Image 1 (cartoon, rainbow, N blue to C red):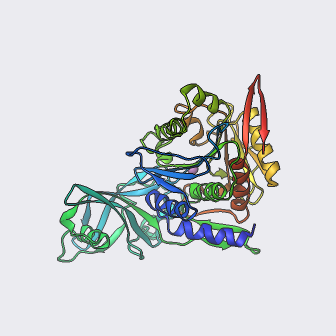
Image 2: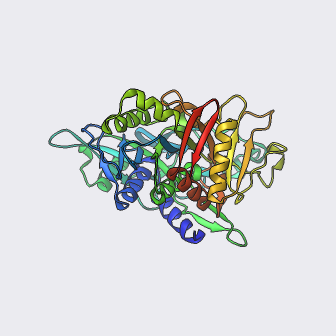
Image 3: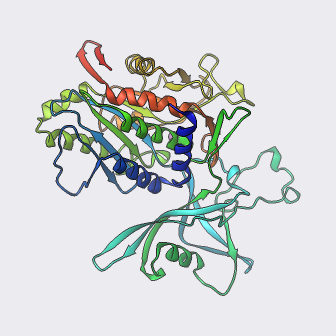
Length: 439
Ligand code: CO
């Protein structure tokens, strides 16, 4: 696999996916091009063995699947997320400052590093809901130019800033939008014109800031990549590419990308919702199988929860566990946690290691320092809907939840290879802790 080609495609995906709505739209385009058929949750499903399909929920989560044959063994799945910590524009966003400036009122979505949002070109993207003759319609909007900035306070006015600063989201993080002119509702007007409608026809909106800096390669030998939203679009992209390149044989391949992981996943389009379980049940019924056959297939299924992992930090090597030390470009990170924040156990860890071996890609392990609390992810959350053998993995990265993160140039290709093996394979549970792995 050509690393440069993989990263070019990844960069194009990242640059054109400023938030979950665009990431899902772009993934749907790639699935469509690969010959997959779009399904609608609100319509009956007629499925055929040998074909591939995809379905979205809320336009911000997508599940794609390929059915090899009607009497498939189980589901071979990879789940990732397409949302990232960001600032959401509030309703009635405009705030005048000193009768000279217009800034926008925003609130935090998820837990981000605040400082790197300052002093860089930003813009806004999301969806607007527009009034139509029959009802309402969703339109995606991306103001594709350098539009706003959140200016820092000069060092002269904040002498202690380098000794640590507590960012107040209601005070420090409001982006400067324009000079105050005669115009009222200038922001609404801009969004309306970008959406190609009149301001009065916009009934509501979900709009988010994004960092304008495109994805780049860096390092002496181009060994690093940097971009916004690597967590978790890097995994979502690798899962998608592996899904399309795979040859499902005995199990249904399922590529799932959920929204709202950064805020706990508890939405209809999040991993705690019914999207995955509803989809698997519908596949089961459409293929003429009974509920008993559904449960049998789940016992012979495997879920890889793919969400980026922390690499050892070059300036803070002490922050990582003494014996489990992931590095950039050293392969897929298998995450462990005794309290099962990560779902990996000896069985699912072993299966993942065998998948990596079969794919010929390196893997490494992550465990939090025992005196440090880690983050959470979607693997354990989705268990309440579909309970099955699950492993938590990710690609190593630095500066997680910054609007500009750093990762390894080789790792995306490694995950694509592993995903290809996963989606082409079958795992048959024979009871008593034994599994037949068919690659
Ligand atoms: Co993540």
